[in-house]
Length: 322
Image 1 (cartoon, helix red, strand yellow):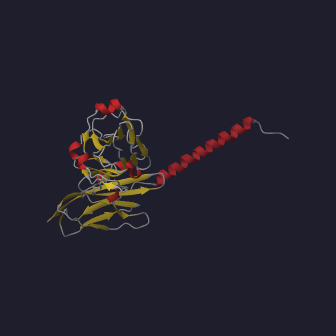
Image 2 (cartoon, helix red, strand yellow; image 1 turned 90 degrees about the vertical axis):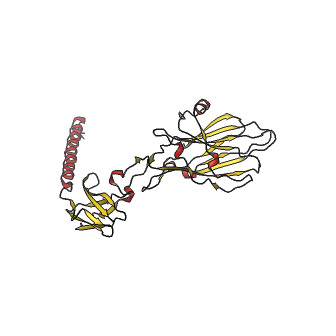
Image 3 (cartoon, rainbow, N blue to C red; image 1 turned 120 degrees about the vertical axis):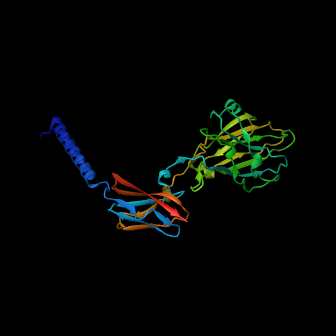
């Protein structure tokens, strides 16, 4: 029995590879040819001015696969559909806390904010930063033992924002009279840092981060320290167990990542679907504006398959009068 030579095998493989490459290019060319931009798509209005009680009638022509609409109202602006930075937002912090062990002494927990921390999670880095104590702005558990979460309330941080600088949140545990009093147990969780921009969806800054939201920095005391239960930001728990009498004094920090507090969501969620691939193209589309003003209405026409998307954007200015 004779076996084919390796050269014959190589020739066959090379020819097969060439054929597959040509076939792939042909399919790509066909796909490119089949998916055309919806250049026949047009949008118009009969008049540019409408009364507040009248719906704006947009006239549509062409037959794209999909049509999406942004009205131009606050929260529905095409130009702000992606993540963007806004100076108009109001920044709030909220967290839950609980305490146990029944020690009736002044709270040995502090809530701190910094915008110049250098991100070096050690004593030197923490000492070099300026920290603003906002503990008095928060609702914390009463001076008794409790196993229930207490919500801090929405803490406004607008006065502490610095454009271009990330914001860090820290919880500091300091022993008080450790030689004669058992210290409190603290459990902090469900922290939300939210940027609220008028007319926009509230941007929850913290839930976008999963593991590694906080890091521990020890200043004093080795008996106990902060422990971090990782997971999503909504289930993060920062726990400092209670020190018994005659344990070493504690000065323990747990510090967050730096947060870009001017960021906010875009408005993709507020787009209106005018047409999908399974439906026909309407000749008109009506929209009722609720507030007088001048708006840039935007329509996006899209033709697409699994690999290729081609779109055409049409803008129409309308004025709504009282």
